[in-house]
Image (cartoon, rainbow, N blue to C red):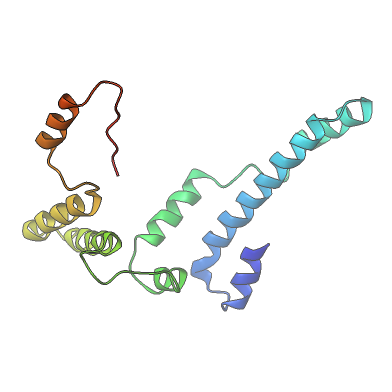
Length: 157
């Protein structure tokens, strides 16, 4: 369990416990699924007994949605936990890069939660810019799609 090892190595921060729990529960559920696959491929009375015992006493069923929501909220909060978990990951400072646009949208969206209308407008614009994947307008897209043969697909990226 690499998650437990990392938790220990990084100083056992209590804010990281939900991430460790999610990782361990996900890993146990994956082991459960793999072993069920092995047991289902075997035949005979002993295999049937093992399958029965395995179902009434599973290793895991995966993390709950509530725990996943807790992790999502934690990752959406600027602070030490997010910084520690994203250490070593490329975080673009340049707002012309796609990841930089996403980070700008994230910061502005968090700032807009205070209720300032101007900040909310800026956040909405930043979100639109962050998710822009092509450099053409909707009208240009519709015109290009109408001009191409029906068998040609228009790529989104």
